[in-house]
Image (cartoon, rainbow, N blue to C red; front, side, top):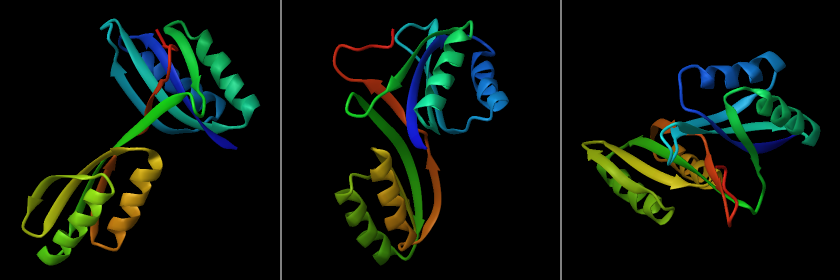
Length: 163
């Protein structure tokens, strides 16, 4: 089984997200990550779902999503034809000298300090899943205290649009 990122254009009103997630639940499909946000048109929202399965399962999920009344479009974000990013907020608790060393390392990995107080540091990173995973692993040896991670959100490259 492989991971697949799906992008849905849906009507922006109460209950749509529940109907989409219920479809996954009823069919026994796993949602590994989920992000939702209003689009350039306030009457529409974009739902980005990271799921897993072989080509047959992903095709079945796509067909079932397309049958939902409030789903206007479903796109499989294919490798090499999309940009996907995650947001990570990561807190490290350690002595000040260790925090300074880790801050320098985290900055070289693309993170930005978001907050620093005595004995703790919160970093922000927007990047690929691999970049987020790498910073988390680096923080484990530096005093990882807490993580808050969004799911991936993605957009097709080139002239392709969801709308």
